[in-house]
Length: 140
Image (cartoon, rainbow, N blue to C red):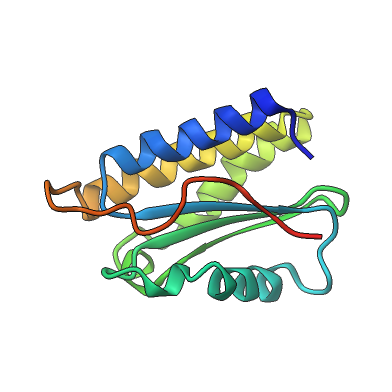
């Protein structure tokens, strides 16, 4: 789905975002989205255990490449503190890259924006633990 270089760029964007926050960022990619994209994102969110972060500050970037669908899902802790239009403005930023055929750039831009917001509300502390792998997860 992604070249090795693209995977490395996405993982590095995740690591950079998480370097400044206690929040957790995950990217999950699939070829197709079975059904409603938000419903699928919620399933993946639970499967990847993003709901188990200590501060409820996990963020999932879900993308179904062949179907041209994507969703961003933040857990209760981050959702409670971001501005009301934050998720939609992040999606618009990503969509502008996607429309130009730059999927990796779009994901990295969204991750960077989420990382800044996570940092504002959940700054990194010396005792923070990386609760989830930074690797991209892939579906069928």
